[in-house]
Image (cartoon, rainbow, N blue to C red; front, side, top):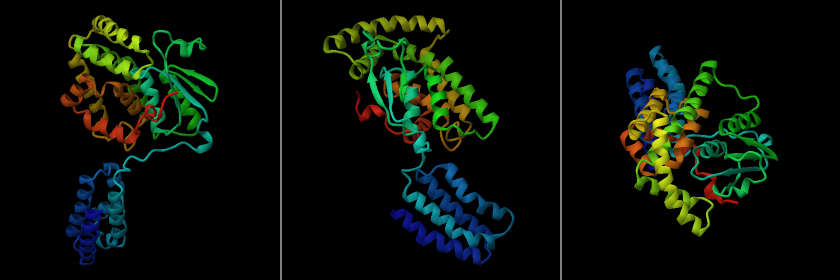
Length: 335
């Protein structure tokens, strides 16, 4: 707030004075000062561009006097936004009457596909309950003919398969929502397929790369999963050993020679796809952003995830997604 007050008391008056004096170059520099102020805070590039572009465009036409009429409001908006910079990535909640009333997710906490569904629910602030399924007995889903997770119950309707769940739920809550163009829609679909057909397949060879990482992963799984005390001990060590050998088979199946190199390459491929944008969706995440974030969420603070952030450019995008999506429902309690 102090920096915002300083900006209001110094830059804005000088900018208005410069505009009245006809100093287009000076005014341009003042606005860039304001823009720089915003960039040093956490205001998004898209919002800065939206606020400032009409006035910067005026300078390209030489109309400094016209700018003086609107510059106060523009910079005041910048100041106010800077004061509330924590609310950078505003969500787009669905209309209240379209939000499902009873949503229950049957999941494994460490499952990337389950986390993909949770990223969608969390981003759109759809309240839901979580039922953690015991992967050994699966007693929590004995009622269902479908024996995999995720299973999402939406007002009594069963939805299965993570991508299908998201498609159907998206249609339910945004029945008239349209993308900006067919090109944007094709790009979103392309990268959602990439998540399902490529990204998820490089995860297991990485999180079970060696015995220590396999044990770290199963320590997370058993700490967050639905296991009894004896099951935790058995699953941690037996499961880690089993998945270590399974990961070797997965490497061969998907032609992975170097696990970390494959993970880093996938992360860099995603950053390249952003092409300088904050999100693939532009100023806000789209379904592809949510899919990538979702499947990476369970590994982010494991050794593999830490290495990925340290050795690639994906960290800044991931941090933006954490801010945009918010906390997972698991922090609100399980059922």
